[in-house]
Image (cartoon, rainbow, N blue to C red; front, side, top):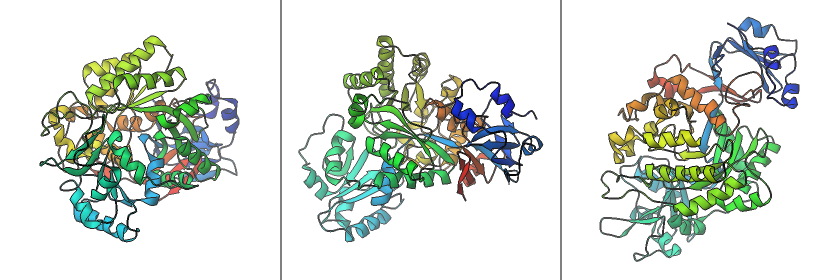
Length: 551
């Protein structure tokens, strides 16, 4: 086995800064040996041992080669033949907002309507009458039927109730919430939103998309207290590290969430590296200050301008060319009109920002690609790395346009496995073109993996199960043509994630000079059957050369 050493690295390290080179001392701080290391590097895919120095990879090679580098101060870790991979990169999730929810709301990730009602009743009993009761993580695809206005009235008649769907695009409310928001049976749907109704035409408690949900959310919104954003970042760091996730894109951040991550970093509480998309609400003031994508350090960095074209897959509001099965002519919701979306994206593009636009349905993706094409035609940039957040339902024409404009699809990694219960709304034929990892990889688009937490769990082994098997939790296969290999799935969850944030030269694979962010797994995903992936756990997680999680 040939080794990739510090000497070999230094001879080809022109692209690295002096500070990086200075961190790489001659003697390693630590050596991990007796391991099966999947490096993520095409030129050097496997190793037995890793030497770490100054928070970065110093060298990789055989056990004998790496142990020969040790000095009296080097710590040695015998990995007992365990599999090591680069730390996983969740390329689209919402850890800061969800962290605040974990701190203050009722978790409703339950499969029983009665269990959900009991949890809301208990919280209502602890809450003064007239004050809001807030729940999150609810998924109507996991319960026998959606929770209704009547259910919520029954358990909390004296409290306005707002239950957020874990997908983030719909809410479920009770009668008192409707009353406080001024929504009546005669209220029309706002542009880009919907007040859903039952078969008799009465409001049923479900409210879809921001233009409709905002009037409830503004009334019910918990106002974060000083320190909440820092606490959220610290809490979610711990959760992610326990799953083997060492980097994440916060996909709809704010100046508050950016500051919270920085505060957690400064307090020594931040274990995960965050790339922070910024939403419309805070974009103008950041752009006016001259801030754009890339500002920051290895821990916290400003990401893309985040915009929205359509709705959700799990909540059935994505904008599609063909109707949802069993829903008449209903084809989803346009969240932002095309012209408005273009003007927002143009501002960001001209100000030097990466642009990330949420688009699930094929109609929405078509419109977003048209905007990216227009921006590059009018004001070309060398490497804008446009992002299509989710990019779920595609066709050959859309993929070809992605290649030409250099757009990166950011697909859901675990949806086939986790959301199998709602895939019948799309049907087997459409599922051959959804979460299309095989097509994306074959086209050279290098897609990353993402959870969109809270929309699906931050569970890397769920991602691998879904992508490799395309089988839901009941055993039904959806879109077998989009299956990928274990090695491809690992590449998507590591190096491709780093590339989507302009950082593939610094992390995402285990190569000399890169950050020493890695995971020791208790079982080898390259040896076990895919049906056993969900039983694999992170045994230890290292970030910047330090063990930050030990299970």
